Length: 113
Image (cartoon, rainbow, N blue to C red; front, top):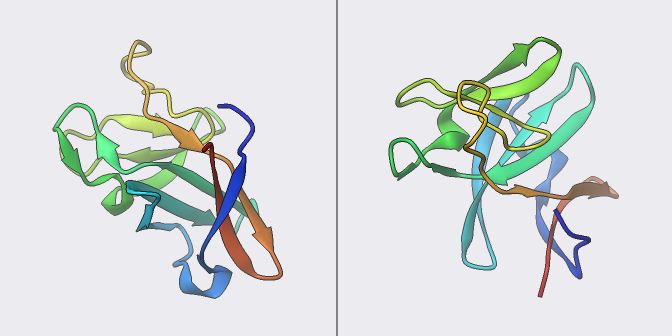
């Protein structure tokens, strides 16, 4: 992940469902955004599931495996790290991650231009 050159305002923190994902279109890319209130973190990863070829990761179930916050794909159930995008079942596969920050209750996703 490289340092973003532009921060895109996506939604407010109140727009996010706790422990669930939402999909946002950010600069033409589908981005899955997850809010985990127990650890007070927001994560952003690609919405594209490389195993099924569908944009569905925002619909996956969130949880933790070995202390790692993850989302399980709703199709074939692979787990993706919300921190790194790495697939826990197949370390050769990963989805892109995006920097995310909260500014005055706004969720912003960082992109490189």
